[in-house]
Image 1 (tube, rainbow, N blue to C red):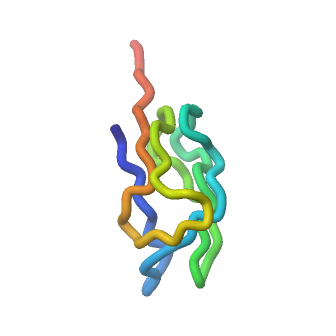
Image 2 (cartoon, rainbow, N blue to C red; image 1 turned 180 degrees about the vertical axis):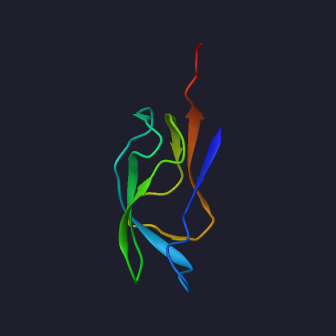
Length: 82
């Protein structure tokens, strides 16, 4: 499983709010595709998935305030066939 962590979105930012999940548990996501909208006191961003896979677990509900570096979701990596 791939641990998706709350990103560091700027100097002095210690936490962020998950405004909205853009993918639900069980949905596929591509690397670089928006996974969630995150808000801090300095910036609002669409957070991109660090890898391709299937969202297996969202650890926090929308509107949750989460510290930077905390695991917010788990992805099951996509199987690559050659």
